[in-house]
Length: 171
Image (cartoon, rainbow, N blue to C red; front, side):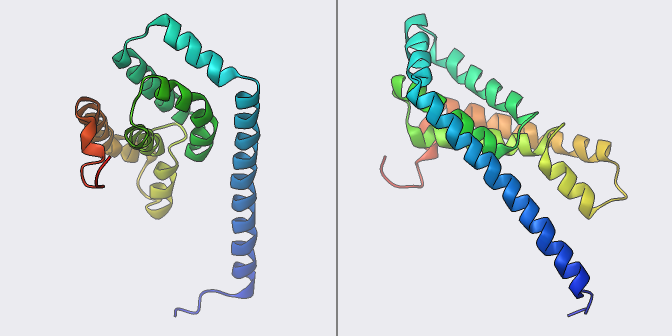
């Protein structure tokens, strides 16, 4: 439309896209191998047994899982966190007879929080690329209300887990 795309820019776009795709696929492949190793080496079942024998309160476990996911969000990309932690956490969650849809919503909200808090917060850098004249500090400060809102939603969903499947039909 604006005739700004020439073959040089198009070639650079294709190379950047290929590099990003290869990086994401490498992370996913590594996480799948990690999950397979965790499953076949019985680490997930050992963790489930350890948590079950420790008689950890469901609220303590819930808080621990959320803190783990938020902590990992400081250093890892969200897809990698989901693919790496899911094979380990699902058996623990199932041993507490928690609804897996509810747990999936909890994980997604935690990952959304990871996308907007430093230091990795991918969306922070997306916003800065769109508005390069705005300092990153101001962008980070602007995300705090959203982090608090998401934390509030996590608290509401923790107390009323049925809300996660209320609109989705029967459980």
